Structure formats: structure tokens, C-alpha cells
Length: 585
Image (cartoon, rainbow, N blue to C red; front, side, top):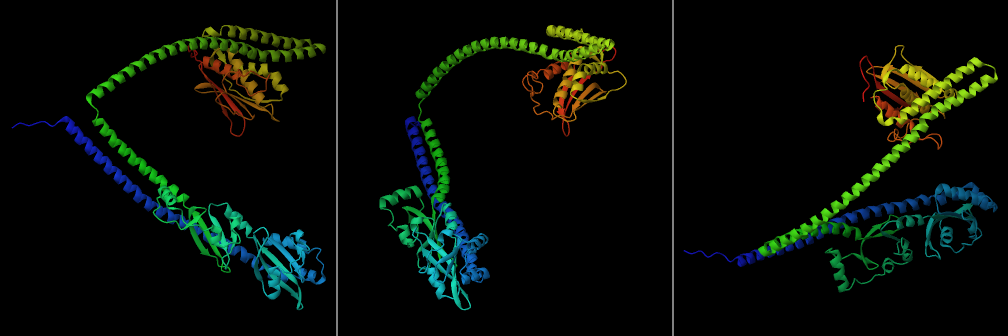
């Protein structure tokens, strides 16, 4: 028995046909799912929109009833006011308008008017109405005919309607006048106009008396809407394609399909009508439909992609692979050229950076010389001024003491310059055991004139036994002087500046410098070179940077924090020295 193999081309054709059938079935399923989802979601979101619109209508109806009922009792109360009755009886209305104005602010009515028996306005909250004649006005005529409070609706020339309560005022069976209270429904119109719904209120005769659209007032609902036939067949088809609602709109407003809701207002047969657009419903439905369509589109695209892959022949595969190899080779050539260019650029940048670092080091060194010599120079200036006064007063011994201190400061300046000139070869050769108590005392002696001038109170706590560390005494004194100088500057704005010095020992030697200034605001840049919070000319911002470097050279740490309450704390920690030990690198 001979078995004939299947033709490859026929197998490929059958596979392609099966894939096309699957794609068509998937497209049919997608159309059905989208159609059903559209109908279900449209019905659901429409009912939700209707429920929310009905709730808003209920609130609007309550607001109307509350406004008219709140003003209904006002005419009765004012018709019995002895002041108003007396003013009508005596025809003396000098203070009546002012009384009505004060009452309107308490009541919240739109306006109050007092008419005499002839219909002339004798008092009003709007003084421009004084003297106007209302003999034929409905609220005046109806009030004369009735023994109670009457409610009238009067159209105005601007197209609006005035709503008013009026009541006859009598005294001793004699007609004195009529009290008119205007109900303010315009504020409700303005409030409704800020929403997305179109609102109107009709009276018992079907006339629009309140509306968010000014052109509707005075018309019937049908005339206000400008009833037109539904769109033509072509327009309806286009609209159906965009909406897919599957239902006929209830009302058309300006050619747009809207949802109409009516509610009876429990006042004189009034009816409240609301028109809500379908735009919010369609936006929510379309967002879900777009997601479904996108999902099915991706699935169909995947099916066609698989179909196209199976239709690719071996020759096309090799051609594509060859093209990819050529593209890869081109990219490699471009990457090699780009790498060579970047390497050249990097070499130039390294040379530029090295030159910049040299210039920065030179600038820091010159600024450090200026900063470190500033403190001894300031002290020398103070001692020279004191020596001059002592010489003028013939106090030679004391002046010689000042000159001796100046000589010590000159030696100190010489040591500082020698250290700065040899900063590149610093090591342990110049280190020796140093008593931090003596270094602290020397630093206080240097800063003594400035501390006295600034009226700074020094509170010092030191142990009786020596605290020895391995280091350079002059450089450690520089650190302490810089910390004292910063603390003194921080307390310059305080009425009672205080600096607390606490020297103690434990696992390490610890010196804390506390002040009662405003504290530290920026810890990130505190020890950076040239960072300062002082005014220009008062410092270059190198004190803490130099001090931190010196402490690090001695194997220690310089830390800063804020005190509880106010003020800052700078703490220097150094390794203790014992016989045979050396300072850490």
C-alpha cells in the first residue's frame, strides 16, 4: 500500500482557510458582545442618571416651597406692625423705608413696599420706587378685594416675572394701605443655571414663569422647546450610529436628544421640569465599549499575525535574516564610531576636569589662608588698641603683656602659613600629645576680646585631669576658634547670648559647643566649602569645611545638630592618646 504525502501548498491553504474562519467567528462574537453590552450599559446608566435627576428635582422643589412659604407670613406680621400702621394713619413715612430695609435683611425677601390707600408707594426697600403708582397692579387690586394674604405673579417689561405676597392694612375698619413682599426666586434661577441641566417651572396654566433659559419665560413648554419633528431618516441613522442607544429619545432640545423629567410642586399647581442630556451616559458607555473593541481588535490582529507567519516561506525567512544581519552590521559600525567619538570626548573632559580641580584647589587654598589669618589679625588689632591706651596712661607693665600676646599671635600666624604651604604632604610627623584643656584655653584667649565686645556669656565645663589626644595643637586650636566664632555669630541677634563649652572624655575625647541662636537650617551643605549664611563681606564660608578636614586628619569626627528649643550644637570627637599610641590616619 502506497501512501501519498499531502501537498504542502494544499496544507497551507487549508490552514489559511481555518484561520480566516476563526477570525470571522471572532469578529462576529465581538459585534454581538459590543451590541449587547451597549444596550445593557445604556439602560443601566440611563436609569442611574434618571434617579439622580429625580433627586435633584426633589431638592429644587423643596427649595421653591421653602422660599415661598418663608415669605408668606411676612405680610400678615407687617400689616399688624404698630409703627407701620401709625405711619399710614399719620401719613408720616420719614423712617418707614429705613425700617423696611432693616426688616428685609432679617427676612431675606427680595424687596418690601408699603402702598397707601391710593396705590402710591410711600415706603420701600428700593428707594427708587418711592412715589410710583401701583393702582392697577394685580397685587394691589387683589389685596383690596381679599381679607387675607394674596399671592400674585406679575410679568415685567424685561420678560421676567415678579412673585409677591400682599395684604390689606386696616385700622378701625378704615383702609390704610397694602403691604407688598416680593419673593426672590431669581436666586434659584441663577443657582440652577450653574448646572448642566435645563430647568423650568410652569404655573397652573402651563406658562413658564421660572427658567434657566431666559427666552422660555412666558411661553408654554411646547413653545419654549420649539417642538420639531424628530430628525430626518439620514440624521437619525447618523445619530444612531453615534449613540447605539437602541431606544427613541423622549424629547429633543435644540436638535439634541434629552431626558425629560417632570415633578409636581406642592404650591398652586406649579410643575417643575428638568431636561438632562445623554452625553454623560454615552461617555461612560463609550469608554467601556472602546475597551471591548480594543480587546477584540488585538485578538483579531493576533489571529491575522499567526496567519501571516504560517504563510511565510523559507526563502522569505532567509531574506529577512540576511537583511537583519546587514542592519546589525550597520548598527555595529555606528556604535564603534560613536564609542570612538565618546572616548575622545571623555579624554578631553578628563583633561578639563583635572585643570578645573587644580584651579579649585588653588582658590580654596588662597581663601583658607585669608580665613585662618583673619582671627589672629582681629585679636592683634584689639590688643594693639589696648596697648596704645595703656601706653598713654603710662602703664608699661600691662602694655608689655599685650605686646607679648601679639608676639604669640605672630608666631601662630607663621605656623598657620607653614602648615598651609605644606598641606599636600600632611602626615603624622608633626603630631604630638595635646591636652585639649590647654587648646580650649588658648582658643578662648584668642577670642576673648571679641567675646567681651559681643557681651557673650561663656559657660565652660572641663574635667580636672588632662584629656590627651595625638595631634597638632595649632590646628586643633583653629578648629575651636572657628566653632567659637560661628557660635558668636549665631547669637549676635540674641539679647542674652550664651555659649556653653563642655569638654568630657569616655571612649573618645568630646568637645561640645552649644549656642542659643536660631539653629541650623541646611545640614546638607553645612560642611561644604564657600557655603555661608552670613552677609557678603562677613565670611567666605570656609570655617566649617577647614575644621571638618582638620578633625578628619586627626582621625575624629565633627558633627552638628539642633538643640531642643533653640540653638545649635557642634560636637568634635577625637581618639584618646595613651602611651605608645598614634593618631589615626
